[in-house]
Image (tube, rainbow, N blue to C red):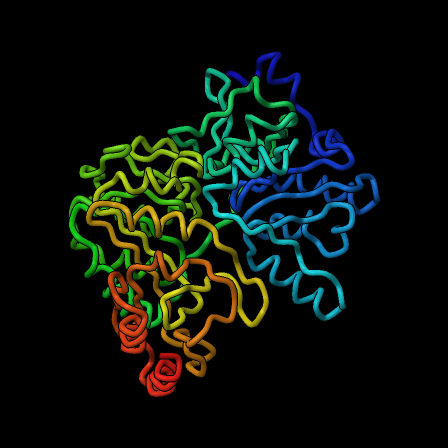
Length: 437
């Protein structure tokens, strides 16, 4: 077996030894989500705790509890500075603590997901990759498994590529290969992958899911995120046929459509016959479904999220969520009450890609209200940044219906959006629209 070769053994070391190989001032690229390597990150956090590393920066998207209980613990940021490209609950908690204590929030770098590999390589110049991989095959190749995303580029541009080999990481096809020759340090550590458990759906979620499913034609090519609304959409698509998948994030809901035969990828122009993703998150059964599955492939995010490539698949349908929509159609999907909640991710990549696809539809969904029904998500003006500009928005969906904004004037857009707002807020929104017109 490859693990018994001299080349493999010469790079094998403890987590502490691997962490010690990272110098002061390193620009570290950390795996996304499931790919965050627990043993290496704990060892790196211990170095930061005792002041054994200074001036290092950590670049990443979508942290999990693995990073939250190690390198992203409060008090380590002066030595190991987090540079988030997409906030999760970990960063939100750190920001809340910082606000209470008068500290600084976690730094956020705004960037479209499709541009992350180029930015890490050319603008930031990351020099160290730490990520999880599946065990090597007979040829000595590791698999990036659930996370090809930006790890593919980092594994090729970093001078230090430190991998944590985990037998629980599924082996996936496509462009997930990292050869042994590209790796500088190997840590073996078997630990079950983080699981994203199914969320409880509310009636509003099922209503939105049914509306969106009604907008999806047979033969369409899907992109969806994770959460209650995408799961509701997947549940409502059970009667569809010949669907395809070309998605940033692969989820159990989409995998279920593959298993049931609803998805066969037969109508795709790009990667026909294959489900395409750049990263994946789910539960244990989902990871088992991924392992060695010949019907799916992982590819780098600068390929998967390239709007020109997305557009080559006919009837591409993107389904994304937002936090609020203004009466002109612009969407804020990042900030709540002045605080960073998430980031742009790949929303605009797929909005533009699906929008340019022949017969394609870009759908952005949200509940009509928030905070127990006391706040409208359709608003006169956004309370945060523009994630998706009004020029790019196509279809907005709430539990009260859908509004196609293409070809509509500002006044027509406002009226259409008021029509899918919660009835409690429609008069107020109409008055605001009249004042602005």
